[in-house]
Image (cartoon, rainbow, N blue to C red; front, side):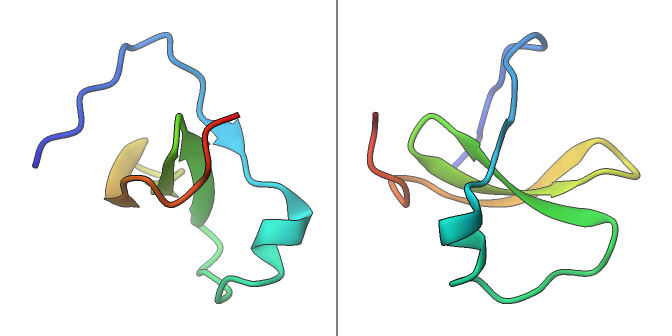
Length: 59
């Protein structure tokens, strides 16, 4: 499956209540939310390295 993002689509930060239920990540990786997907974002490279579609209920 390919994930296509518009270049101007913001990656929402992850709410603290969700973060405390996820495993800690290395310093260059962050959990982010895109729509209803939970995304693993590499800040150093600017790449999405993994994602889980439908992991977050749509607002």
